Length: 295
Length: 109
Picture (tube, chains in turn blue, red):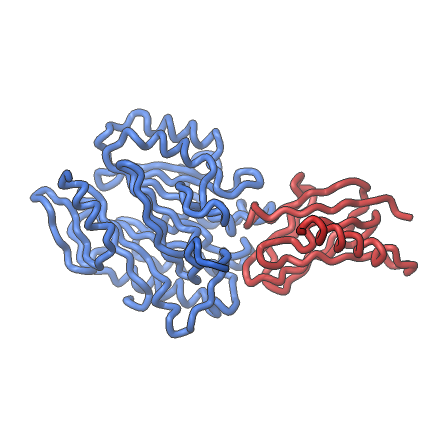
């Protein structure tokens, strides 16, 4: 096993410890402490929802913001991987923006399918969160911390959720084309790029085209939201991980009798199934998921 | 079995919509367990169809040709649209694209 593979393996165990490969070799960082370039991921806040699964989604998003702001080493940026709102209403975007604007770190936000409902949803999302350098329906890329970051949009393509579309895939091919194979690549999107649970709409139908473009790189990390739980997957040198939500959990795929959608848990257990993620690049990547019960 | 159920429910929609009342006939489609129930209904032209979200999750009823759109419906919210053009209309939920429904509109009597 190569050392980098070992690091990846350890990072995947979710043991509550951050390991990273630094210039001096394998390093172990205490929980919450990071030494290199870091960013944070939050997802699926569903501002506007009010139901049995979470009676106050604004409060849990605010708690997330407080937790991220309290990190000892502030992330270089915070990425929200979509479903900021529940119904794409103007007041929902206003509320979400007001809460997220309290983040100390710069915010990058991708839309989920709940953010592009109706004719006005995409416009409202763009007015609230669009990146000035975004292309097409909002996809973008940038270089930071020694890695190349790609933010994909896989909602809002016609009537299909979990679709990149030919225009975006052509852009991705061009974007990645000039990158060296040893460049660490980090890809963001809302719906999982891999087939997490196609029967529940938890896949990107043309994700295999994007994955094919990523295969030549030595270290690729793909981070998504949408399914409100941590699910990890590996395909060669490409590692995938979905994130917890800040709103409510969803059932584990394959659970007998389960269906997607808000999952009610005991009120005292809710914060233990909501959370956010920090990721360290040094120069590999290792992520650490924290629940809101942990703070 | 599902086909039979849909057929039975669809057949039931016509007598209800053929009321002698001067008000436009009405029909209801429930959104329940990530499905339109019934998935297919047959109505007379002019029928006002109300979509009711019984789920805890958000849903839409959106024409595949985008000619009409309920936009987002929370639990218990409803949205009504009058179907005046004879023909078959297919629709879906934009939040759950695997959800599909059909409304067959027949000429008014």
